[in-house]
Length: 575
Image (tube, rainbow, N blue to C red):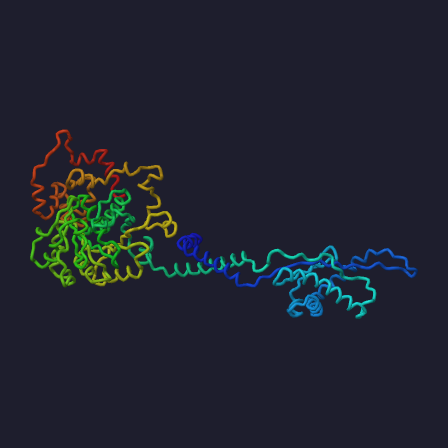
């Protein structure tokens, strides 16, 4: 584990660490109240030498070695403080209930290095008792030393003796328990326990976090990462709004671009959008992907093949009573169930009535033929149920070109994604890659887990704005979206829409074809793929179009799209 990994571990488990720190400190502080209170008092004793006289009774001047003699005697007195005899004298003098050994053992003595001064420290449950024991300890030790030196003759003269130099004062506060030390020790212990739990939690974390996790653990490429934005999810009424912010639109463009180039030689015409478990947003991803594909000039059909919990009709506010289930039962025609949308070139195929046998219908030969037929006219996006819940997605993947799996960073389990991939490949299906949905772009999450997918950390709120580049108001829409949204229809084949043609024209010659078909294709423009005629759409298209006299006519020729403005728009493609 590197330092960066350790710091990210701390950041990911910040709440756990704070909780452990607070709980440990509280436990340590509470434990301090269970300890007995003790007070400490200190008294000083001085080892002095009495004056000596000659034979005539005249005083003799003290030799310089007497001080050293006093210091050595003071050292010899230190062990006496902790003897049972001294303890017995203290108990007898003060009338204590404690044993002599207990009293003597509680005394702490130190000798001043520069003078024969002994410091005696006594500990007791009360302040008055501690002061009395310290004072009595000096007197008891002096009496015991005198008794030892004179052989019990108390009237004999002693040249060196211990005297009370400074009495102990009554302490004003207890010395134990030290509540601050208990608090700090408890906080340190709680922090260590929290670190251990954080390490175990990180070690056993089986959730996908970033694109690297998808690649390294699951073995799938990440086709895109959609930010966690309200406009990319259903509202309270179940309707899916149109994304308007630059980060959301740009994330969808990246997903569209990666899908186009997932297999250049054999571009997909039908894709199943599913997930490993429910609640990961596969229906909203499928709907948003269908919108962005249609706006790029690609006739797109969004099929709601989730015959257990259909969502597409509600997301687009269309009638979903008649749809795929009746079409598979051959009770209606495709023209009867295809629903137009407000997005040009986007058609819906709702789920219809929920049948009692969804798996049998979706795995039937009729479903396979229907997908093949629709793929000739549309880019087909199929919203399928979760893989691990039912077998519908596996059956649909067999009938289509491939599937993409939707995962939610921090929610989807690695084992679930691996099982989903294995289940699809077990029926010879193709998994193109994964899409990270509801990826957090918050700075805290990026620091804790890394970027959900590369690129977001380098952008400002609307792109390069934080780095001094463009902002959302200055962003030119995708060149293909300009042709579709502004001109009201698909763009003619040209330099700006060449990438779209790779998917939009199913009959276009592949690179492996001979040179003659390519020259023929260049000599005569290919007819554009037309969506299935719908009565409502036919009525709208047959109506005369009114033009504003003051509005200049729009030039949609290839030459106009190769103008400087067209080139600027085309340069934004594929960001």
